[in-house]
Length: 195
Image (tube, rainbow, N blue to C red):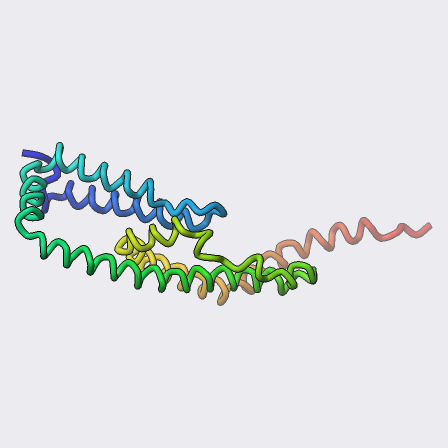
C-alpha cells in the first residue's frame, strides 16, 4: 500500500505542493522580460506528480483511469473540448489583465518622464500576441492553476496595497520625525562660524 493514496494527508500535501510549484512556474514567467510561459516546467512538474503517485500511491488507480479513457472516448473528447474552450476564454481574460498591467506601468513611468521619444514611441511598448505565444498557450493549457493563483493572489495583494496606501503617510511621518534631529544637528555644523 502506498503513502499517496487518494484521501490521505500525504496525497493532499503532494497535490497542494505540486499545485503551488506549478503556479509559481506559470506566474513567475510573467515577471520575466523573455516569454518563457513557464509551461515547460509546469509540464515536468505534472509528469513528476503522476510518477510519484504511480510509485508511492496506487498504480492500479492510474491504470483504471487509462481503462476508463479507453472505454469512454466520447466523454473524454467532450471533456477535452470543454477544457480547451475554458482555456481559450481564460487566456483572453488573462491577456486583458496582462495588457492592462503593462499599460498602467508605462503610464506611471511616463508621468514622471518628460522624454518625448518615449511618449512618441508608445507603440513599441504595446504587447503583441506573437511575442507572447508561450505565455498565452500556458494560460490556455494550465487555466485551472492560473485562475486559482489569480483568485488567491489578486485579492490579497490588493488588500495589502490598500492598507499600504492608507498608512503610507504615517510611515513617512515616523521617518521625518526620526531624521529631524539628525538634520538639525548637521544643519548647525554647516552654518558658517562667526569671527
